[in-house]
Image (cartoon, rainbow, N blue to C red; front, top):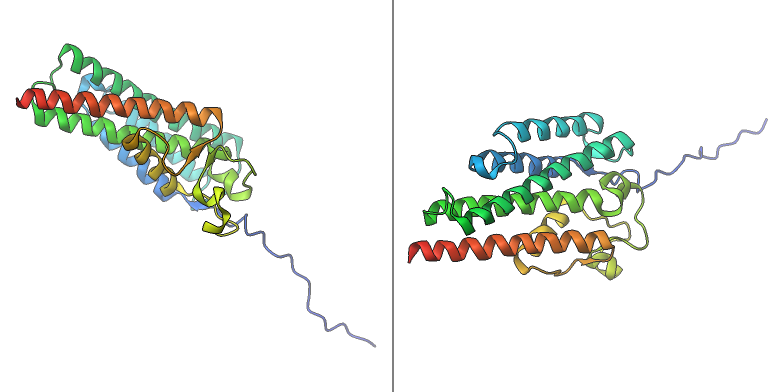
Length: 229
């Protein structure tokens, strides 16, 4: 009787299936944005002090509970929750910026002191960086869960590793730190640096963020210098 001693064939794991990024960098950014919202003066917040942090916290808990650990579960519900969360953060950042600019033009409680103005302006500015970083993170190529499984040949945001494959591994994926860096550089250079927006939505969002940052930094610094003088 002949026995087959050949090893059993096992299905090789798909490396894309295990790429999922850990959720904690994204969650830490959301928590930081929540704290910054609570530190803002009442007239610069879109809602009472605890309303937005509670809403954002519940949405974040739903994401963590639905896909804990690494982000690789593709779900229409979780996708909707993630989009809602970043939309609330982005809308809150735009609201605070608009009202800060209005206070700078017409005079507000925080515009009489240079230190208070710089602190408030810095809080709004950092909040917008976090909000737009999370917005890029969730909108680019279908979000983190979709990127874990598949990267399209024509991305919405082209990172250096995608423009020149020799700079990264064959299965390279952008992580939250890459989008945070994009949000920071777009807020300081007011234009694309190493990440090129290819999709129309990416060009629009990056333009809005650059304009908001220009308003915050330009008007806040000018007003602070005027107060000190």
